[in-house]
Image (cartoon, rainbow, N blue to C red; front, side, top):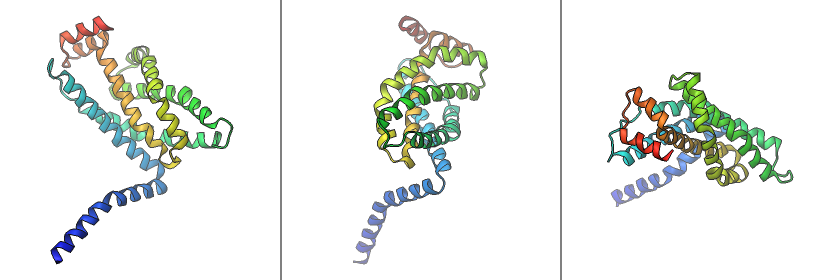
Amino acid sequence: MAPAASKLRAEAGLGALPQRALAQYLRLLRLYPVLTKAATSGVLSALGNFLAQMMAKQRKKENCSQKLDVGGPLRYAIYGFFFTGPLSHFFYLFMERWIPSEAPCAGVKRLLLDRLLFAPAFLLLFLSTMNFLEGRGAAALSVQIRRSFWPALRTNWRVWTPVQFININYVPLQVRTQGASPSTSRLASWNDWWSSHRPESLASLDTDRRSVCPHLIQWSRKHF
């Protein structure tokens, strides 16, 4: 009987582990909101970049061998920790105080503020930060913004507007900022895909002696 009872207690303990982890996470959010959100955003951003690279490698494995960019997750972790988590935290606090939920048309006003102000500024900050972390100059940033900013912003508006409406109006404030981290990572992954398929970008990658297949350059010239 004793082994059976011990096994049942162990299984009960394992079953309660997610609840204890969630309780501890909510406790950290209450005690150290900015630091906790920064750490969470950093981890999620790094994981998103790693998974995006794995998916891209899987799609291209029949055509060319491409090594993973080991510095990618680190750059995304830095961006998530220092920018995504803290900035989202303070932006949503500002939004909550400036447009309280009882204000007329609060949901629509919040959505417009997020989509028309925060999203473009955040994307521009993302492109600038990644350009700096990759060691590129102002000329490269200018080219990247001209190529990627507007297509990426349109995609963000089209895909994430319904999600953000729910996030900023129905998700509790203390965890609301976490909704920005996965979406940022996906937006960044889309931007990586866009850049990698532009003919000029592929040519520059080839000049930098990175692994790029010639037929991929031809394909991008035909479709873009």
